[in-house]
Length: 135
Image (cartoon, rainbow, N blue to C red; front, top):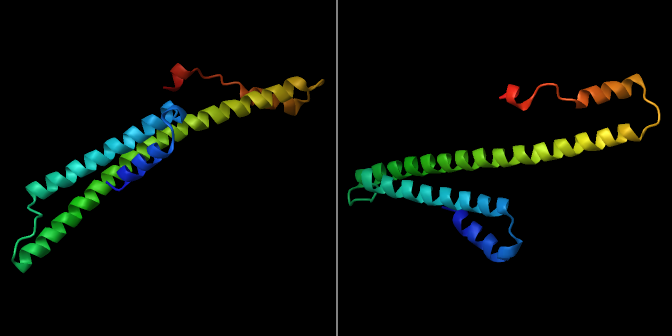
């Protein structure tokens, strides 16, 4: 709910041509989760009678129900955003790890003579377990 205006502002700041696919995907995920949270809050309003009545006890109960609904919705939103952000960071980490691997291999190839430590470093770069066996 609170992230929705922020996402629209960020999209407004950038030109459509400057956004990458990852940015568009990230913004659409955040906007989608924000809409889900707004829907969850609306459902709590309808089913838990959060709309305050005139009596004092009903107002306190309605406030407690609203607080529970908001905490639940925010928790779901944060968990969802955290999950997709972690997936995105894992992809970025894999790209950086491969770049580091290539640089280290290039440095080893540039040496004229190899020492035992260089060969051990080369052996550490070789992944003997295939990707199919890992999963």
